Image (cartoon, helix red, strand yellow):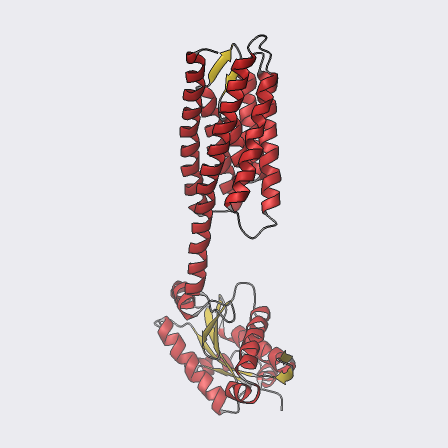
Length: 385
């Protein structure tokens, strides 16, 4: 084993580390990119495949066709952090390139790639059952991926056992350190992304019901109202939990909170898939019905009202029946989102002062819609005695 042989191995592995660092940066960029998950998987596969091939472009050559590089570690990280699709594509690309290079070590080289992919996938499956990835888990992954270096000892090089031993130990050490370091960086990137996602969720979601909050509703619906004014279709429903204070006073705030959560689920399931419902504040909820004219909005609101009135809720050991009052406003030309809220709020006020458990239409549209709904349909919209 000459000094040059040792230096060649060290230099090759350092170059592989540089390629792994670039792949780690690419991984973070792709993870943060928007788009469907399958597309991100393909981009991960491309990044890791380029990294694996790049690592094989400058290997340590122990003998003609016998190469030492960091390709297997790149493949293992792809399997562990980017998923099965990225693992399959990266491993296939690396094997294809290794076969094209040829030489007596081709079979051994392909075996190391397959071994690393299998280890990475097994580790990822194991981690999927745990709440978080710890440093100890990354050490386990590092030991698993570095174990592929043992295969190097079976490379056909008669009389050069020392060279193979040094190559295997160097490859194992670098593979272990690279896996732990770059795996930790990828894991931390995933943690940061998840934390940012949770912060966005907390900022735009109601913590009690899980529905979007008023801020998110106004952000997402503002443009829809502009579109509705142009097309003349779109309605807003403002819904209020009747006598909510009595529920709190009689059964306690915990029961009131549970009733609000159940009401939120009921509202969401009672509306259509494209309708957007949010908690407006307190015991008020709001929904926007895109592409919906006034008559249809009234029918939907009445359906929601009746379904809630017929449903009993079990809260904190008590069985209660709740009702809602609903104000309906239609997006007319010239109305802003704030105008729409004001109109719906006025209609809601009339519904509550008129006896609650009823649906009322904003005054500026009542006459027009009354003329478009048959008399029997109008009677059906009145609350049951």
